[in-house]
Image (tube, rainbow, N blue to C red; front, side):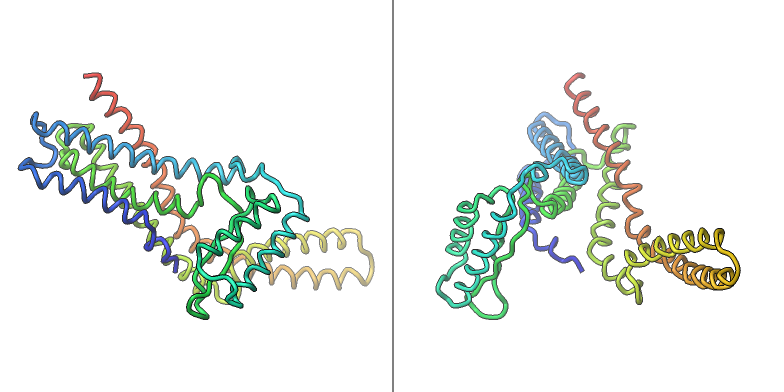
Length: 309
């Protein structure tokens, strides 16, 4: 299960943001969404904060697309192999020093690791994470990973989830769930749908890998798809050999093709079964993403219309 998302510091930031606006509301005897003059500052504040949350949600999609399309700066940063090898060797020695308790404290270890990366000129392409070592009290472990200058995708995902939940509450503070107009109905309805589908996606992201692992039996979905393609190539090759074969080779190749076709059929059935699981785990995006785009467009129209009229 992917439980790390529930330990994110973004959850505290989102809770503090929504909690602060709720406390502000409780300090003044006004209903949610009131258009009285005394509530204008609260309306403007909650409105702009909600817009800021939506911007954060949209930036996650941009960050994800930039990484997938290899447009992130880290794909343009390079280091020579000898530099990377020397840095890795020195980091292993640093880990040995930590294990021998010659160097203690996470801050000191981070400083030493940063000095190694700078010394070898690989600080732009590598980062070192320092985590507590469960084997012994006071020890830490070093983990090397590629640097992501635009932020780690996991952190962006955490921000997307928790500020999306905060946005749902803030939209309610701002409008009081009023649906008396077409715009109000669309904004509230789409907000509820986007947040609801996003929460479903978070649950599937948390528990889905475990479900898929239990469903995979003997072969993972990746191996199943690879075997399916493998049998397709083997059968095509055998059929080409059969077309050019003569005499006794015909019978041998016919038996081989029949055997391969039977194996391919079993693999195809397994691939279809596992792909249904994967589609179930990913299908929520087919609704969540278009609804999110439409919601952002309506939010922009709402903001412009408020200031225009």
